[in-house]
Length: 286
Image (tube, rainbow, N blue to C red):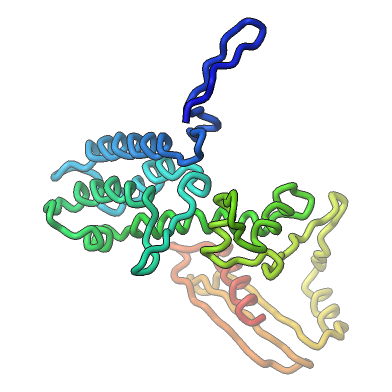
């Protein structure tokens, strides 16, 4: 589809078929073909760079190679995948299958897994992914798009995108479908049914209610005068050359549960290790 040249202030302005905005190439039909080619080029470039680190004798171990691939290559390829790679699934006569954009990305991960494993070209792609301990690229794209969608449905109502996400999730429109429409339709997430957990916020003037008795005698007196039904006593110490921790649960002045943990010799551990373990034992009792 060609667009006529516009003239503003006697200056001709020639329209462009695509434009790069925030590292995403937008075309006039929103098919993202140019951006997919751009993403494939980045993937092949980073795959070649990773291959230089994977030497047969003194190269990077496989587990570190896969982590580097996920952190560097995947982050470059699938940047803003929820925009240009949605919908991730297309309907066919035999069911749903990955979209055309996702199919093009399979070759990049296949190249990386073949390099890391030293496999033959005839090896099946799913076997390469399994031996390299990597998700198939279509599931990896689904995971990224799903995380992006969950961030949308958990936005605060004051965010302008919150109302847009709720309106889009209601139904799949027949005309002018966006990436959000397809994403909500595929994953079937209802923003109204999503539980929102509000974070606990404290005033800057808040002071913790922590009381430390001045002496052991005072501790005993306060413990005897305490009328709470449940009490937990804990301590970590160094005794006879060993470091350990213990926690005791009392209910109505009766011992209900006791947890103990011996960490080891005092030459390998310090008293603070025992104190930290005592906190963990306290949480276990709770």
